[in-house]
Image 1: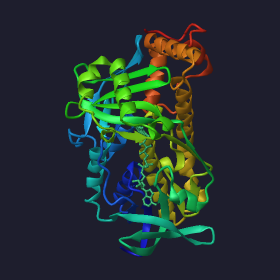
Image 2: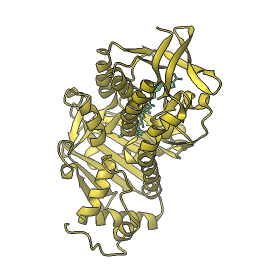
Image 3: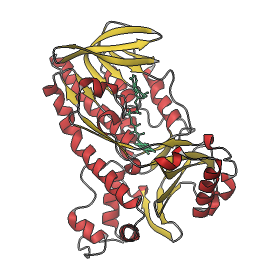
Image 4: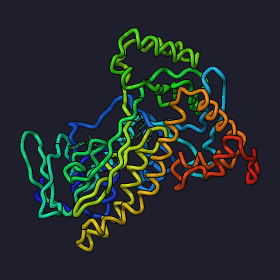
Length: 418
Ligand SMILES: Cc1cc2nc3c(=O)[nH]c(=O)nc-3n(C[C@H](O)[C@H](O)[C@H](O)COP(=O)(O)OP(=O)(O)OC[C@H]3O[C@@H](n4cnc5c(N)ncnc54)[C@H](O)[C@@H]3O)c2cc1C
């Protein structure tokens, strides 16, 4: 390990790894520190939306994703539990070439991107390296203090990037005020043998404070996520687990057989959900990206995509700052100005969806059904929602008038198709 780098990135998650590649490919000297001793490989899956696909494509990494990592999904069917289909979103409506969603096993997908870092001669990736604090001169960040294999290191850098997730130690060390909100509900995740009917279609069931999502993933498997309150998960025992399985089989009877393979709670993972609002993302000599700056509710399925888009935007700004020899907060602000509006729109949308979809209120459920049925009939509004989820639209999917149309209080004079 050297004593001075151009850029030190703390955290080799999706944002950190993409940024490290982009910078190294510009010949910038990068050290990336990752606390875990090796990349995480578990059953976690995520949707690689069109905006994320473009980021990987621009890096030459989309077409080479191994088939065991991703599955192409064209349609998302939304159902009211016990009552039938409400709406279908068809990714085929989006512009080519990114006109499908890729439902991905996060581990192999991440490994694929990590593998590409090995070819970069100006990039050092250090696993089992924990960020412990910042080196400063006055207010300016000069580097990091880190621990690796029982030894402490002071490593200097012109720019330090906190890509270290929701509980970001870099954000704390920078003294950036942040609201870290944990939603009352998270998701129980698991993988089943895929029953018929899911080949390129995902299902999303909404009920009374109940959500079940089902995505086809590689190897003929089906990934499920089931909404669960943090309190229920904390007290969940074998009997409680059985009742969740029964509830899932009742929602979608095709799961009854595959669920028999799921005999223990430890075959599943529980992921809590957070929102992070940071007052600023930049400081003199440092910047935070991804969940460290702006985690959002997974309803929008954009958290990882936004971390990757941060990486792209920051790589351009950082290149300019390094060339000028000026990594002050004022210079780095261009990054935050570019990214904040999109991210905040998605955070608001995630919270709106949480309010409506996670609700037990019959009035709200009625409204949700009405909106989804309107979307099913209204190609214009449906496209606006789809492009937002796909990460291709910067502004909110609905104007005030659109909201009134969506709940059926106004006719849509602008719609020309069903
Ligand atoms: C249930 C659920 C479903 C989701 N589904 C989707 C989806 O479908 N699509 C999508 O785009 N997003 C999804 N997300 C969001 C997505 O997982 C996150 O937004 C994304 O992983 C954030 O990436 P990141 O690089 O900012 O942070 P992370 O992926 O959290 O990476 C941070 C890294 O920093 C490391 N680190 C932390 N502290 C230190 C330290 N002190 N020293 C060194 N290293 C450190 C960590 O070990 C980690 O590797 C979902 C989230 C949840 C909870």
